[in-house]
Each structure stands twice: as structure tokens, then as C-alpha cells.
Image 1: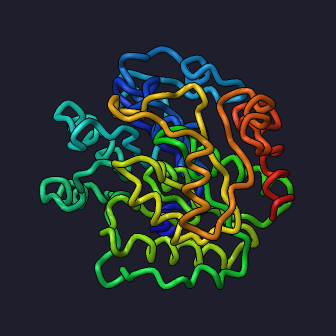
Image 2: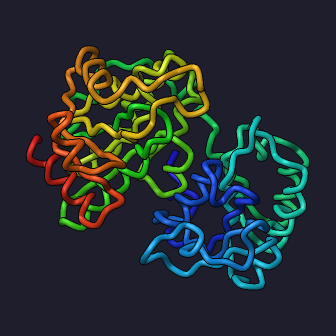
Image 3: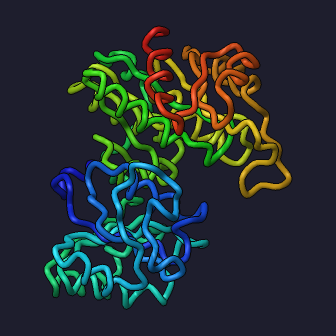
Length: 347
């Protein structure tokens, strides 16, 4: 999927994040507000935080002063030129909460296209597709997988890509793989390198990756092939390609999709992403995090890719000494550029 086929960059956008903007469930909303090169967030809808601003809620410096408001109507009062509504939360079960329906209809009546990361596809439901037709707007379901005719098994063609390929791999879910991927991409562009990136989750697509899909919606046999197609497409136009990884090879729930991204990308280098303070896996209190060294052994055992650097939430000096990898925290000043320097040296 390439959202640039549907939208031009800097679309004036309202982000719906009701009740979740400052929680783990609001990571898509936060990613769009902080990083999107496609959707220009002008207001965030979260009634529990109404009256505040994004920088205040997230305690981030240098963030554009985007207001947080109670309703879509309030957002439209602030930004009447809005052209898109991004649903920035995927509630438990993936279904659209009934309380959000009126808010979404308000945005559509005002001429906003709807970009949804829900597990249920609104565009395939007659009541929503007919409503969209009535008001002349589009519904884009970013989780919708490619058609069967566009799927194939992996055949190794990513090895022929005329670009260096770097994939982020993690020690767990929600450790910052997408953020690290984007920050490396941005640091490379700032350094004058012709870089592109591939998203494998909904947030990355909404942030504005050159190509992407929600990889966990692709049938298992075809996942590596789908990633190969994304990587080779971006490599045609760029010298350096960053690929967003998913989950963890040592995670018994999600290792299958992790391995498919690793094999499909056929990366020249891997950046490991780790939260050093995490002991239990996110949402899996019976499972423990295996750690950087175990994850590194697994990656290098099942692929020709080498782990060359560590993106960490901790103290880079301590983490680098502990695991023998150059390390940096992309949330720190110069962290992303330091990490990129390590990657380029390895390449």
C-alpha cells in the first residue's frame, strides 16, 4: 500500500484518539502527530485531555502546538480546512466503538476522508460506504491486505535490490522499532542520503512510508514475498532502505511474522531495538523477554544478516558496553544520527 496514491503530503488532519492519546493504546495517534510526513495533524480529539496541547501531554520539546479537544466538532472549529480524519486508536477487539460513530460522521459531513486502522474494514460495510458516497469522501482501511492475485511466496529477489537495506528487529513488541526506523530514515535524509523506508504496521503507513502494509494481515505463506515486493520497490528509487520490523524472534506468539520480515527484507544490517528495563513481555505476563544477546543469536542463526547496532531506551554507554554493540537512544539529542553513523560504518 502507498497512501501517497490517495493523498498529497501535508493533508490538514484531525486525529481521533479518544481516551487513549497518552496511553499505550494511542501509539498510532502519537506517531501521526509527531512524525507523519503525510498527515499534518491540526487537532487531536480526546475528551479526557481536552484543553491541553500535544507538547504538554507528551512532555516533548519542539512539538508543534497542536490542541487536544473534546469533540470532532471542536476540532473542526479549530481547523475548518481539515481534509482527513485519522482513527489513531485500535480498541480491544478491533471494532469501532459505538460512541465514535457520530464523531466520524461529523467529520465526513465536513468533507474529511477517513483513514482507519481498525481490524474491521469500514469501507466494506454498506452503511459506511454509502455514507461516504453521499458526502463525497473516501474511507481508507490501512489494515486491508493485498488482493490474492498480488500475493506470492518469497523467492529471494530482495538480494538483487540495488540499495543497502537495514531492518529493525526488537527484543519485544512495542519497544520502538517503528520510531527507530523513522528516526534513522530522517537522520539519513538530513545527512543528504537518498533514503526511503518500508512500513510493516498501520502507524508506519500513516506516518508516510514510501511503501508498506499491515504485515500481520497477510497469509503466512506469502508474508516474506510481500515484504520482498515492498523492499525492491523502494530500492528502485533510493540508495538506502530502512525496513520496520515486527515483534521478536524469541516471542512465541509472534515469531512467525518477525521471521517473515527478516527473510523478506534480506537486510544487509540489523539494528536491534530494546527496552533494558522490561522483563515481562507486553500483554503476556507469563512470558519473559529473552534479551539482546538471545535475540541477536536467533537473528544471526536464521539469516545472513548481522546485528550492527543497538537502539536502546537506556543509557547508551552502559548498553553498548554490556552487549558489545554501538548503542544510542533515538529519543536523546543526536541519538538518531549517532546510531546512523554506526550503521553506515558497518555497511
